[in-house]
Image (tube, rainbow, N blue to C red; front, side, top):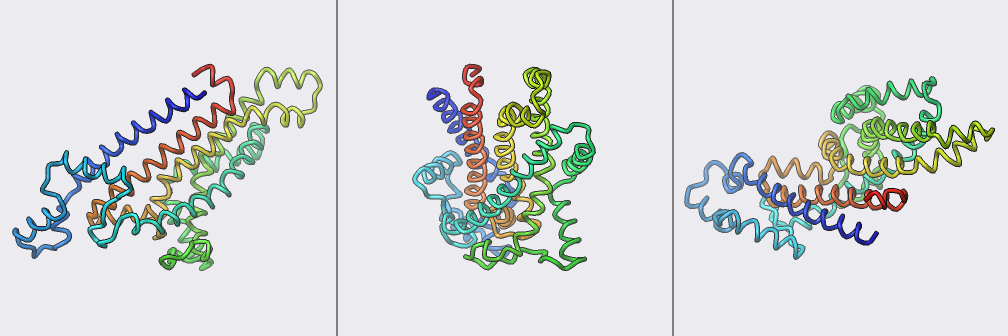
Length: 315
């Protein structure tokens, strides 16, 4: 078991290094010039050259990458070109806002996905299963930004029940302003349930149709006891996958939802920094998002092996 964990951690470290290369390379091919974006169109060639030298943009790319990576390993995320502040200070509150949004969504989404997945998986082809299947199929087909826009039109513009934009004051917790979290959370719930419910349903349905559950039924054991004793425990792996899938999906989905509702998180920060060509912020946020994704995948893989003993020998 220890060897498996060490191997997975090693793979995660290599993946993060590869991601750092890709992030750095991607920021180098962004359209426009950082120095020109800072000084404006009226900048002279001399002032542009001087600023590039100050920012280190005139150094070879390999040296720029090694300096950046070395700073990351020492906890230095760089300095924002637009705000003139350390990137860590700039995104600190926004990381907290994003984690709050993700945590609230997970707390609501995972129990709902497990409940609906178990109900539909144990009652295959029933009315509830058919209704949920059609709804989840539609949810998978609709992108998050479309779902968010439709919910904003309905609940904010037409009915006036909720604010359409998340105007959370800087430095304050989103939990202190729950009205600004409803639409982002609701959008993530609608989009996330579509795929997670289907995943749980498949796991439960497979366990319910397995040979050992059929033998239990033939032995005269009541269906409720069969479900409670054999189906649900064997569907536990699906529950772990749901949590992992949801958390990983949130990493990407939150970027879109935060942009739609102008929620002050790292997703909106990433979009704004790309638009302003604030390269250090783009690099830090993109690498942070990738690191969270890799870490969640690592934890889910280890948890799955711990919960399903047969996977240990298979690996």
